[in-house]
Amino acid sequence: MKKIVTIIPHATIIMSIMFITLWILDQYNPNMNFLDSKLSNTLLLILFILSTVTSIIAVIFDRKLGRRDETPENRIE
Image (cartoon, rainbow, N blue to C red; front, side):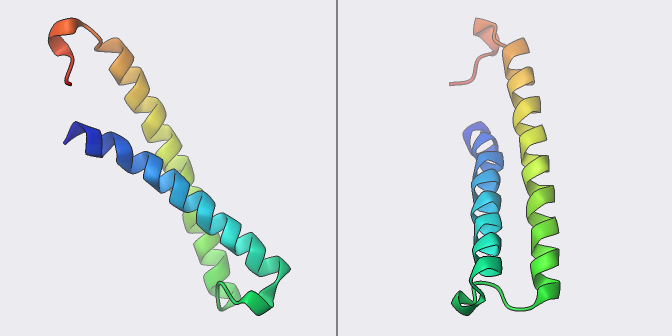
């Protein structure tokens, strides 16, 4: 379970960066029609930025917590 919890923020970062890239590509070439309306583009961009920031904070917090708790009896493998 702990491995899944540590993978989720990384997957969110990857997905957010992927959708930000799609948004940028849609702005340069609207004929590709990756995303539809301007409002949805704006809302998606806000969502992706917020989820990226949240995931980065979660990863940093998880790493700090993991380094503090590195005693052999507390290690989960």
